[in-house]
Image (cartoon, rainbow, N blue to C red):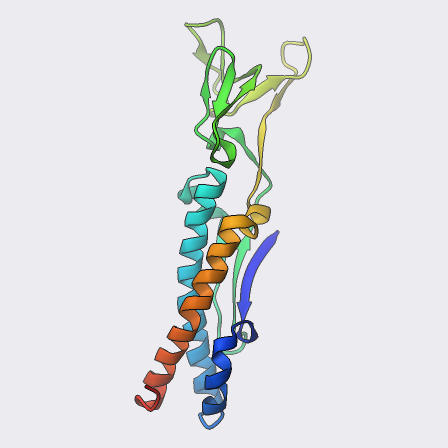
Length: 193
């Protein structure tokens, strides 16, 4: 299971406001912090999901099911993205059958997996095997010794790497100080400007 998260101490731009907040009611400040974290986190989730779709080749709809945001509260002051999932089946990468094998697009690069199949029979009259569109490959000459083919894309691992991890850090680093300043203005009756 992979997690991306942010804590109050992660952003250096908030140190200036820290002194001014010491005079305010601690519970209200914590609530304002949670609201700022949740807003920045929600925007970060969106940007991370978009980057992961480009990086892995998976549709955003599937990534939304695999990535669950855990929102901050006044007690935790922590926003997390909890990701689950193992090696994703080739079925989810726009797999289509050719005479040479199945063509799919893991890591957003189309390639042919030689000897693999989705349907049965001879070309051109192939029939559906009723295996929900999964991609298989024979393990030996026996008729039913087949194995489901995987892509090598593991969502929790990919979430913290490359473009998706960078998208999270950039979005949160840019949005969180602005949102915290907004919440403090609202909390103090525009004393901060």
